Length: 389
Ligand code: MG
View 1 (tube, rainbow, N blue to C red):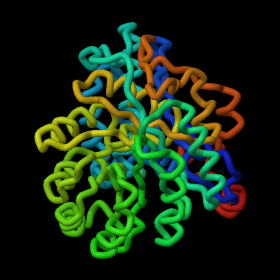
View 2: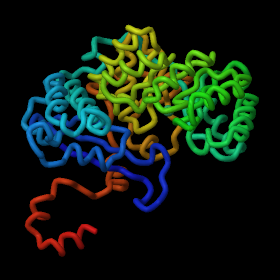
View 3: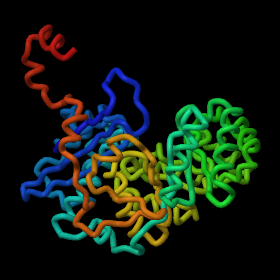
């Protein structure tokens, strides 16, 4: 099992969304290789996978899986969950399980020679309408250029956030004014605050000040665990509130949905527990009448997994397509699902149906491992520390 840390800028350089990734490659004795990823902190997730065991409920995921039958996806998900439970059963542990779960579905598809959506019960549609998301630029002219290229893809909904958006209400208003004027009244516009509104009272004021821009939804205005604040916000503003990309595993989603009453829930398939877990989360959103629109702002592996999942669900009618110039989005997957005329088509190739660019992996790979521990233990302490620093 390989846990590969990719990073475009050097370790001492600043970094933006989408410029690093943790991908997983699982090799089987039948020669099949499964691909997965998680959009998290690569070094942290890599440690969860590679760490030596501390005791029987605190075992690295690699050691849990070696020698197992990769086709036993559900059994292995539960084995990873319980075997690593002492690490916390949430957050980075579930992110690591997500990456592996996606790789196991890829292996199963290749083994049975069918696309992943077929294993999930078959497809309801061939293509999914996309909305485009992008990181807001600091200058209005630069945003204008981005919006133009986004609209060229034929999408009817766009979302902006990140950068310095959400820090300065006057600047936010100027930006949204310019964007709304540019796109006209018929394109839907959403914003992502990444928790930058200070509390629900402040968020209510900001939402009221932006009402004139007819926002399709407001994403993550305040932290997902501020249940009371989100509930009060949902009850007092008319704009739809969305969130959930930070949550992991079904229990967190159930609590979030019941306590905050969001309009849209956005699990990220590489963070929420993988393809296996998003199915269970989707049952919960359906039970509560909430729309599920997965989060997606990383590599083509995430995109492909999301496409396979959404075409296999009766209500998978919107997908996020990131407008992300990072080579990890643009080029890591040689044949990533394209966005054409506003829709993303599914692949009919076995598994996820994707191939990685090996040269790109070698170019951006961060060469560190948590597995070289025996030589560390047996080396003279001073020398080994100096070597590693
Ligand atoms: Mg977001």
